[in-house]
Image (cartoon, rainbow, N blue to C red; front, side, top):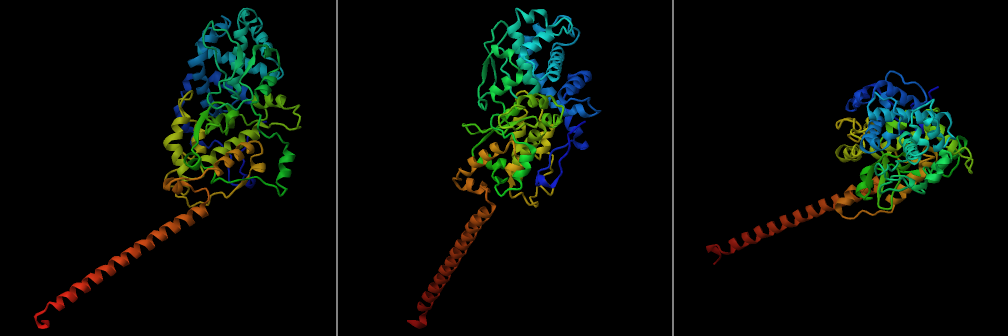
Length: 461
């Protein structure tokens, strides 16, 4: 059964989870539907989500398909293509052959989440399967292991694998491409770890090291206590984060990096919320993997990916769709940045969450609606709350400098209006005082001139 639901309940305090309205169907026109055949789209959707797609469900993963195609074309297709069995989908284009191999790997992982990289290589190279060439269990074993490592990263988007440098270049370790924003405990592991279950590799990498894994009952109990962790949307507003905080927003391809704040003042945001939305099901491949990853967690907690995805989706609205300035920032700059790199087009759901589809003359754009005062991070963001609180503490520590920064600093609307009211009232008072003084001076000048004229009359001599 599909567990994906639109959460419109009051306890979400106005932060409505995203859904797919019919009017947004046209937003996918930028994605080349013919690039991936429909049969392959359905196969990828089914192995990711855990159920057969409906008539319009595959559009949910179209940004992901675009991303996957770009990854294979730009980096890995030529390196890994020689691993495929000569008879495997031999009449398909190279990129499609690679995608079908990824589907086969994901199917094996779904059927047994405790399997290892070596186990997947062995099954794919088995004559009954014949996805990988027989040499993958012998001479090409190292490259085959790295291929499966890359496949798991492309399937889950929990990490972005660093592809091999080229054909003939030996792979030394399983490496993550973290760029300038590393949030992982380690970024490389020896190839000998290929015999360990996949969830152990993920655990060592620390893909979700700073998330809070609490049970649903514990989350409900938090709402009944007096202890709260208030999050103020005015402090997490994108325009405030970039102007007052001086943060650079970096759009990344890894779910694990979402809302990660780097020491170099970069805020990482996952660029494909439509992928999160599509996989918010009990049977998604991410939920299958994470069930095994945290089933023996020492704290007794668990990671519900649907909950995590819902919080991540809400965070986009919290950052971008809470003010006119933030929506304008997304339209003018961040939307273009979000589709740079591996994505050729902006994610259609990202546009919706960040207010791109809000008319400039709508009720929301005119700022008549009352913004949210605060939300309780421990209740409404139980998993991502730590990252949001860290971001809020950072912006609270920043001080506005200069008149422009003071004008943009609307973290506390009461203080902002008070400060500028005093400035404007004082300026008007000074202007009136100057005008009054100038008029008095003119009046005195005319009086002196009139007096001088009277003294110079002939009758007064």
